[in-house]
Length: 125
Image (cartoon, rainbow, N blue to C red; front, side):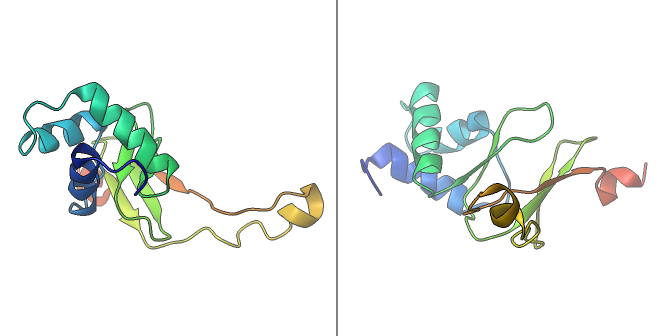
């Protein structure tokens, strides 16, 4: 981990030990349990650095705040437009666009797929 710090380690640990996809504010609240004097700005800066380094995923979903995922294995996400929950989906989008390099000269190194709709719990209503 580049630019190691106790704060960055605590933030990464918080994300890698949850299946939730928390906002920066939720990560801040979790990390404050072990580092009470950490600032929200420090959490935001470290989340950005961890995402840039590929240690976590940053997800833009719906109209809400970005979410963060400590699971960097290939997978997609489902965003419920009703309750705002983000869930992991084992579907991987790699290979969906096999002609991008041939047609446009793009070399795809990674992809991110967020499916939007209504989750099964909200669909009961």
